[in-house]
Image 1: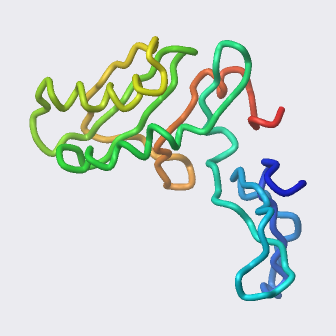
Image 2: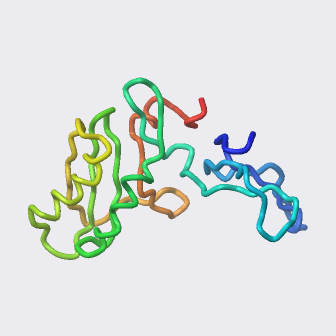
Length: 159
């Protein structure tokens, strides 16, 4: 990819003699940095990883973007929730599932919805309390998932 252009992160690890990983797709989106390393080495640098390939907000016009802008505002959620997951259920609809530490008050719900509404003012945000959040087969829990992308079989924001 050209510097600054986003693409899927693929790596090769030859140090594992039992089973080297050749062109292993990590499922992450990243971009090459246009700037050289401060240490003086000539190797290319990578900009911050922008998210997972399936973890992008889909908009009505067919474009997609990383949810990291509003997820970054969810740091305060740890005050009243053990864990959370945001799901995009339609182009302008989001469901936030929380495993609460305590009973949620109206202010908690407004804080959560406000983080999303700041970026998507026309969105409908539903906050749901749950005993747990299902894990992926890998055992990990995705912080954001686009159910509409999953239903459409969309594998990457690049497609």
